[in-house]
Image 1: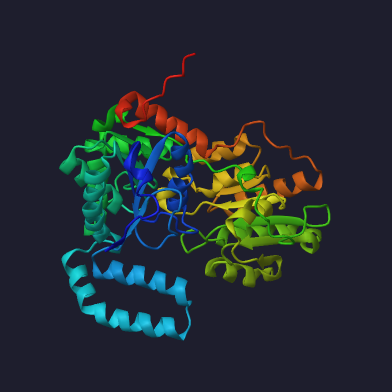
Image 2: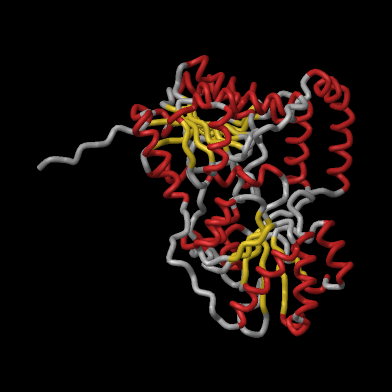
Length: 453
């Protein structure tokens, strides 16, 4: 079921331990992973040894105990196996043959699982996390259970582990779970709603990553009272990565010869560039002279189908250049070398309570941000405070106007960085530890007295 920790066993027998349940821990490109993984070194520096239980898809940690557990459900086993096979043998012929055979063998069980459960495939990971969590609690006696996600299976495991052992439980909720008035039309949505209720009723502390998400949850569950708070996830400062070798020549250094707009991260049908591409086409029609020195650099994800269709219809496909994925240590280097950072927020209802994690990385780059947002005054304020440009994400005219304002700022060299500091992971961790100190002081390491002469 799992890969047990080995290198850290001797170290993990003493001191203050926290049991951390994170389904996608150390998975590249996953914001849910980054939110918790960036905190781990700071917890260790505070004298806390995190014992992480995660699914097997991420990199194995080397600085603390890390148990990687397979889920018990067939659909989750298929998902995990596909990911591990692609990492080990690539996606060639062997991968297609092996995953085809695996799907064939598991198909009857998956059909039964869907009929009986109707939940997301990671739901069955809860049982694995509970079994291994009980083992960790018996052996290491952690002072706190910390669930984070992302995937609601971690929170379910945290609830049951608290119920079975009495260990204090804190929950970090990454995304809005349920929106006001949202119909619970299937079993999975009802499970998500129940997860939120369990957190608000039974967690010793819980925090959301935006004020709006906390306010929304509190309206549904006022019993959370002062056990609930919000804290922006923040991002690691680029100086933490400067010792790494950056990838040279990714894009041209910003200059008056070309106006580089950079988009970093994933794009999808729900978070697509359709409106931005239409706005860009409108801007180019108004200012045809800019076409010769305008470049849209895409990192991590090529143009989505909706954006590509809009670019093709407008005849501006050549303005978009896809650079592929960058190693994490090279991301900030590339961000600092563009003239405008593009943030595509999305257009779904949950965007009103959600701030993309990429936002906080953008702020550390100290470059102007053009944010195409959707009904999120909290995100708008953060961008505008840092001299960025905000547009309604589904309004072509609004985006076109903001794009022109950003271009004029570049053309006239009039944009100035804000004096407001970026939001760091360290500040988020300190806020969390301060709340834990006030409510669950016994979960923290005992301060050591200064030696006397």
